[in-house]
Image 1 (spheres, helix red, strand yellow):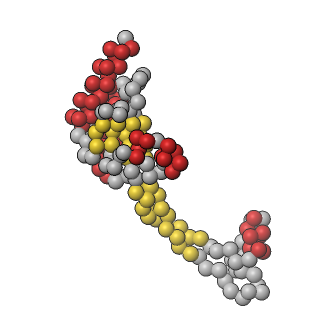
Image 2 (spheres, rainbow, N blue to C red):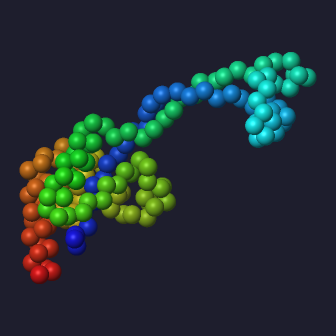
Image 3 (spheres, rainbow, N blue to C red):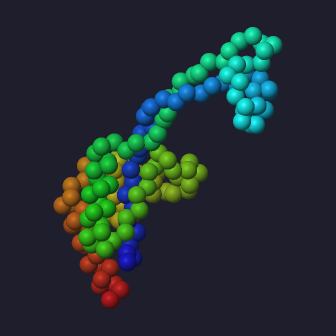
Length: 146
């Protein structure tokens, strides 16, 4: 069990991952009939026009490849040392919650691995750096709680 808070801050990018079709609603009758499971395929006969399908982009949050590799490596190394790591995506985080966390305001480089306020790895994080940091944390935790 981990007694030290270890957080890995990453920042995903919202990108287009595909498209989907949307048929626009043209009248109140269409809304009611769709709710009842009836699909006429045309708009109200009084309008004289047929709705058309609109293609909209599907957007999702995706981690850049370098950050994804860092997340995988940090989680693997943390399991080996018996530590728990919280991965926090600041792009998906609630804005109000983000403003309340002063530590996140100081983070400008991603990914950032923060074990405590004085122990932090930023930018391109090598596995050796993570192993060294986690070994210090595991040793300190054993001394403190054994």
